[in-house]
Length: 440
Image (cartoon, rainbow, N blue to C red; front, side, top):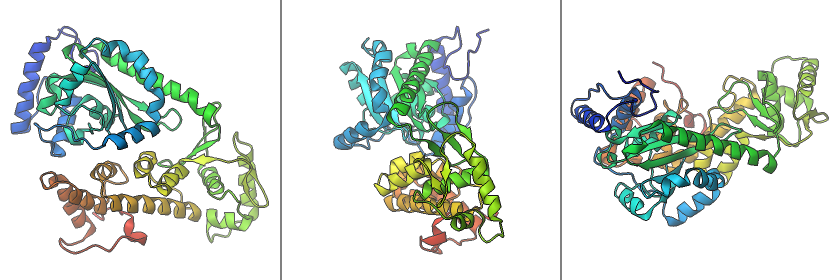
């Protein structure tokens, strides 16, 4: 009996490619007509088909092209993966020079930045809009290696009829995600696309190795370019402090709050003001605050100075990265850097205020932009999945044929929030801009 190598590989050792294509194609047609999925469809493919169907992907559709020539050039110039394109070409160049395969790199939103290979192969791929500027997420074009690698954050092969959309089924692909080595933020995906011969352990290992090499290269570039300490406070209860040398330091909740507040107020805070930001109106002895600051000074990294309390050297934060991107009008970068609410379990008044201000600014920009790509990304996060305004905005931003899923979710949330159909919600602004969990 053929042995299964791992669930991310398309074919078991000894499997017949032609026989597998026929079996998966029959399973694909059965799923489209009956909704059932059986053998020999892998779990990663079955899950992806269900996500694709839930997103109302047209099985005969092709990827939408979203970036024009000027937008693509600017996005390439500023994207972090531009720094590792020479490395990808060096590691994967032999694959694409054979005239049968393509090398592609997409950003964290699934938009193709580079598609390289022999002109004849690129012309064939143009028929399915496998071109720079096109968006290859599962929500746009169904199961495919770059889009599925983004969805599951794992290297994966997609073989022939495993693709959800029929125009893509003549191809086989292997793709691996690439992360920022400091923040672990997903930066995009590297992919090789070609014929059935890619359904082998070699191609999956190759893209995984290329992705890891890219992360290592980015890590080598980062500290040399900027050794400023970096504080991660988004989506985590205890901050992580990276100093550019050695292992990151996990801070206690109170130290996380203190370091964040001092980083957010580079001119310093008086003892009374810092105590108010941390403890509110509670009757706390000044000795308590001084003891916390003393313990914080004993840790590696930036040291708090006094009179007023401030940081002796600058500290960058992921909170500041999002705020700076919003200041410059770069909403995609802001959303990509936003990994969740700021120190979500903290009840320190100063932290709560920073948390709400950042979330409000991000959501107001998102709702004002009405970009279906960005809205779709937001509602698929734990912090956006119950955001009624975002679901309604997404339904409005999509073409009528694609509105069924977000409209249904919006109706469900209206019922959970106790808002009758047809009753307008409170205008955005203040507390009304922040989503709340349903009451039932």
